[in-house]
Length: 354
Image (cartoon, rainbow, N blue to C red; front, side):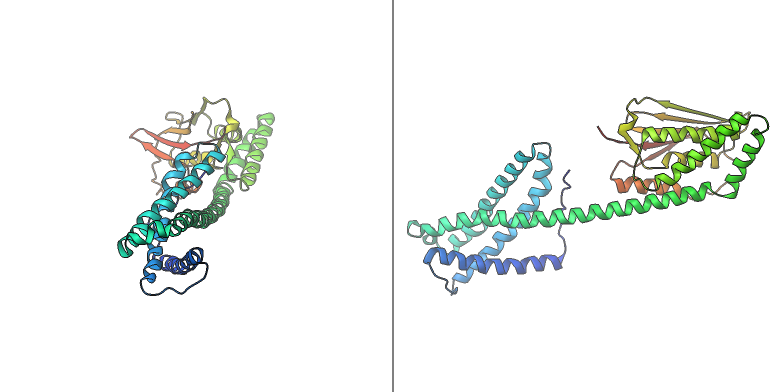
């Protein structure tokens, strides 16, 4: 997929550098044209300097027309076959070369020197101009496009590097949130309480806890996790919460998608959202905490009822900022929060591969 280049002014330093190259190219083109017309290289004299000066607006116009092609035309032919794209691209650059030459070089020369410069006796001037114009356009476009592609690749590599760093930090944060005395004491207390009563359930609890930590460690190496794997680990996390909270928690998962291998999420985002729900809400038998996970076509929706704790916890929103940053680095639609007096809803967009 192509990323359209910016059409804005890029700054004076690169602009002056470009104009310096244009001056050099203008002299080269003038000498080359003089050689084609007279068979020898001659130094420009008098009004001939205007001929060189008129090459500069021609080259500058090519620059902006080329940016227009990459910014507006190329994205509109992305769906066509690659060969068709290349043919249309070359044709558009060729036409731009003729148009720019006519408007910014041919007409100014006629206005200064008169029609004699391009009359029947000087037909070589016309032939040389309308040959060099499109060829110059294609030559410059190649370098502009190559530079743009190189800059785009560098930006993508930087984005990937930043994304890996963010995921690593998210992994560390997830482990920091989970591997702490409070969490461990809760799970160990639950495990100790169910071992005498139900050894099979205690063994299942241990297996789920082990699977969950293994998933945390493995996800540090991934930018995206399949929805299938997320659901699998979500059920392990659900088992731990339901075992610990019992009737105080009502947890449900509604999946309306069959091909879960084709959908992806940034790792740990589901668990992070659920942890936030448990952290900021109290759960009792009389007022249980409801957590409903709905998996729909384009998003995973986490809905919970509001049961605020009596002791207010000041929200830092560090986890939420981390989730939004990872989505932003992936270039996807950002997650949303929708809430009212009674419910709190988080919408996590999914990435899809056919």
